[in-house]
Amino acid sequence: MLPVGALAHIGRGSAPAPNAPAATIGAFTTTALPKKHPMVDKYKAAAEAREAALCEACRGIQRNWRRAPGHPELVQGDNRKEDRNGHDVTVTRYSCTRCGSVWDYENNKANQKAGWSLPRR
Image 1 (cartoon, rainbow, N blue to C red):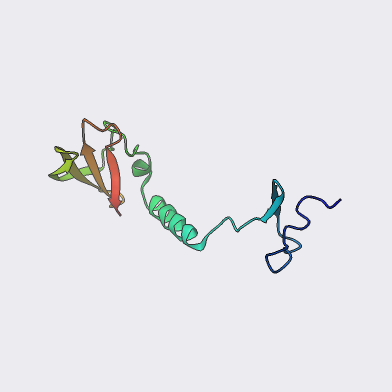
Image 2 (cartoon, rainbow, N blue to C red):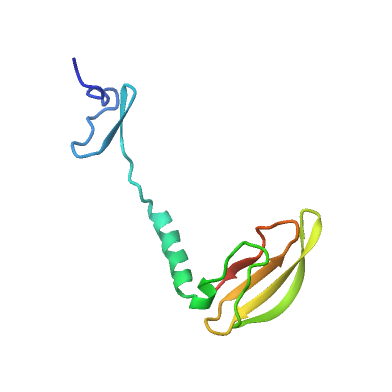
């Protein structure tokens, strides 16, 4: 008797690569696809670069949580009203004097996950 997956390559046109990791699912064997996609790596690298550019105080701000504190070096900018699900919320722009990051604080009483966000650097 043949081991499970020994004939899994039949009908695909070629045998699996000898060093390719394989997983057996029922009577079928599949070869693993590469885990990292180049575009995902670029986005991850860009996000890590943005995070590294923040000062220590900005890295400590809890994002997306209403009523989370900022830090003393944030200077308040302008306010604006935005519509969220039929009601107005106040969004206040802040900038950090230490690292220059621009922050938005959304004060939305209906959404606990509103709060600090980093729209751009």
